[in-house]
Image (tube, protein in one colour):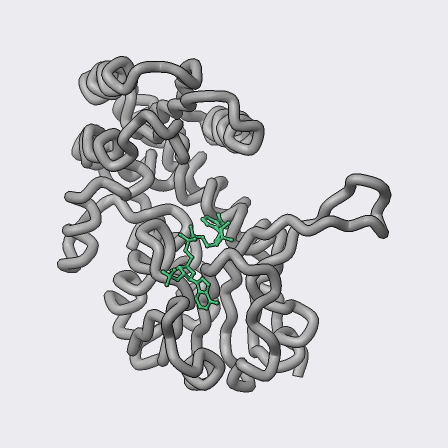
Amino acid sequence: MTAKIIDGKAFAAKVRAQVATHVAKIKQSHGVTPGLAVVLVGEDPASQVYVRSKGKMTVEVGMNSYEHKLDADTPEADLLALIDQLNNDDNVHGILVQLPVPDHINEDLVINSINPAKDVDGFHISNVGLLGTGQKSMVPCTPLGCLMMLRDYHGSLSGLDAVIIGRSNIVGKPMAQLLLGDSCTVTIAHSRTRDLPDVVRRADIVVAAVGRPEMVPGDWIKPGATVIDVGINRLDAPEKGEGKTRLVGDVDFASVSQVAGAITPVPGGVGPMTIACLLANTLTACCRAGGFEEPEGLTA
Ligand code: NDP
């Protein structure tokens, strides 16, 4: 069997188009433009690239983008003061602090200082609790993107066996809550899981969020299963030239795509959906703040 490729890039473009249409609608009917503030502390090159691309896409869907770049040695108190200012700014509907922050800053304190209603990353402890109890919340972008692709491919997820490899707060755990919310039977595997291949072989849905290049081989996969590869790993690629690299996922695409029913590629799978869901979350936050109708299908 050769798996169907779930094209995250095309799906993300559809989500962004839907966001843009709804943004235009609320601008016209309510005179409000959704705004996303992104805060970057320090000069990490990868973070700078992410922030630039988030800003560009925010503007492309018709929203306002506010970028705040702070020096790497910015005191924690100054960052908290900026967050307080953004919390109280009616033009800002979503706030994202690019992680990781430098070591002298307490990440949890920063996340929990963001107004939960503007927490478009969905990491605030209130949003974690709301999601865990099945209530309306801001949902972390990467698992939300995975859920959208799974719903689109399967229709109903009810009763399916899902195995998530990885138990991080930003991917594994919220992914489990979302799939449980859609009535999957959910297993979370991690580095201490006994006989991981056997656990994964039971799954109709496998979500790999580990950070280990090509760790999951085809013979761990139940024939016909759907495989969502969250991993982003950069490997040296001397065949492309000196100093060149290539991206691979946590799944061995070559062997898994021979067994699975459907699979997300890396790149072009979960990655583009993450930014699209950030824009969707900003729109959702704006709609909730203004009491406007929320767009369909853009949140859990
Ligand atoms: P973390 O490092 O926070 O978590 C990794 C998880 O994998 C841990 O729970 C760990 O278990 C588990 N793990 C590690 N080794 C093994 C193993 N041998 N067997 C089973 N489980 C193992 O990573 P993240 O969740 O932040 O990210 C995971 C991957 O997803 C990374 O490649 C990251 O780059 C990517 N990512 C991609 C995004 C996107 O937009 N596409 C967004 C976010 C992340 P334990 O808890 O026991 O240590």
